[in-house]
Image 1 (cartoon, one colour):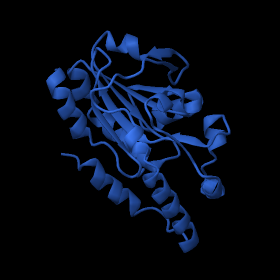
Image 2 (cartoon, rainbow, N blue to C red):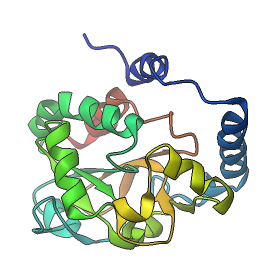
Image 3 (cartoon, one colour):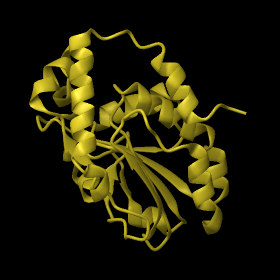
Image 4 (tube, one colour):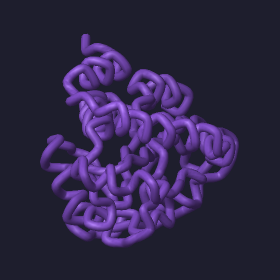
Length: 216
């Protein structure tokens, strides 16, 4: 049995190169400010309706939530990008439970603000067998209440650490989605919602499977 995602994340963090005290404080400050912004309170909650959307997949083919739901419920997860090690770990963890998700007649869609080329790279890097969609400008993420802007005072650190968001996302907004995961029934009703301002806190695969149980 694979360890839970939180344990895998803690193990991953032990491999990160240490930051200087100055850089670590910038990261901590950004985390505090995002947590204090109240953004998680604005995220769509269970019981609400998910907005319909159509986004291109990794090869540019449009994928519609509405059309997906004609065949059964869906799990929709938002991630930051291929540059985010937490995201890659999460996407691979969801791949491991994909057979169980599909067995229940449910589709899995992963969404990021990256352009389709980066989405395709994400799919190939993590050996994903589910749809990876590109949400240019974070339009869909915004409708789910997930979008925030990276503060100007930390952007240079992002770039120094290899995360040039304009290059990954194809715009200069410096906006990202929280890592949010939603289970949506065939009527677009959200039956489970998870989002956290801490990028290291992700929805566990077991929580998704438990939320799907009543829909099976």
